[in-house]
Image (cartoon, rainbow, N blue to C red):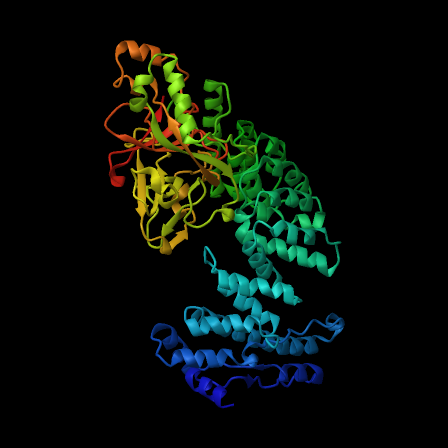
Length: 635
């Protein structure tokens, strides 16, 4: 007990201590409360605990580890269930028994709050963190305590630490009985193995209702909510099947809210919501819906539907001008039932109506349905990421053979003497869409999320966050003879529209050259990535993540570039050659003349979900300084 006494001295109370048994007159309840051992907060203990957080001392860490080493410190016990005959008991007896049960609940609440604070403090100190992971593997620690440890270890950390994911996910193989522990355990297990997660954990969704396995499946869906944006695409089809089950389907919409937009989610979602409306279901319609949801929304607007704010969010997301009359009728109905113009929803409804009328006007002018119409020109942002067809890249001949073929091509126009002037090296970047987690940290990629050193801010221009488009690991192309041989180049471009703003769309680029690759971390989207998407513009999405296969090649310039290299007669013959195909490439010939050289070219590639202008390419030009790279998009 010496270790326990040391901890008690630090925190100002005995651990554990017993609650005094109440004198309820019911021996069963009195005995039940008496065997629940809990600690009590004292003013001294509270002061010591506050000091521990604000001004920790060197010996605090050892005392904390000592405290967490006691299995009793984690044993919350069980809350006594309500007895079957409780409602039939006399009023006085129910009052006394309720008082006794309140003591048990209060004790457990104090214990859990105290333990949670210990976890929050301990996870920031090496020894305390190691001890927390050890407690997860300790069979003598109850699962309720493990649920608190696991939740705190994985809370609000993106990305989560691999060691924490491993420690929490490992509990699944040990067997989990407490449903409070299931969501966080399966969240860690799925996140730890995203590519194989559906194969391993998808079968849980086949459980039969009214069984323990079915309750586990519901708990797993709760655990998928925080990582919905990370789930592989194949989870979508499996969740569609789960949504067809009446009880299990209730837990699916909160997961779909966080997944990438997919119109296939809408039909089963509308079918599920025929009987009831949930806030998450309405948010799903806002995210995945289109005009097919209009009849459903009109029907709900004709009733006293709760969650009016989410209902308006769904109307805004669907964006169908046909909703305007129903919204008008809905507001008139609200005025007749006593709102008298004081309901805050009136203002929000008018905003949605104004947006839908703007949408109707855009449709009338252009003849097609637009998500947004800035001034008189539609934004040339990337289209929604649809599934890209698998590619089989053509194998290129050896460089010697490529040169011979180009010389023969030039010879056909009597230009073989200009071969050394016209032929230039380049590196093709052949993109294949993959899951984000499949991309190695610090490797070359197109689209997805960037790998940046800790502390490096996401490039932005005021409130306009730039979009990440590619990164190049220079060691993979070290023989290019132009670029540095080490480091990582990260390319960002301004693709937000802003009427009259300078610089404008695709007129600003930032290229970061990182030398120290040991500090790289995969960076999530910044919080202000959607700051300009107030409901009138379609949701902004990162480009699809693509693995890059390098292919060394030789390229000829476009005729407008060759103009300065050839005579008028030679240029006329050169223009008879077939124009080079726009591809993703590093270095090579630029598309527009000038002193700057081409650094990177990104085509309108369906693999990455990129579309620049009218299927043009986006070029990055430089003059030997990565801090002064400028973009260009056009012919």
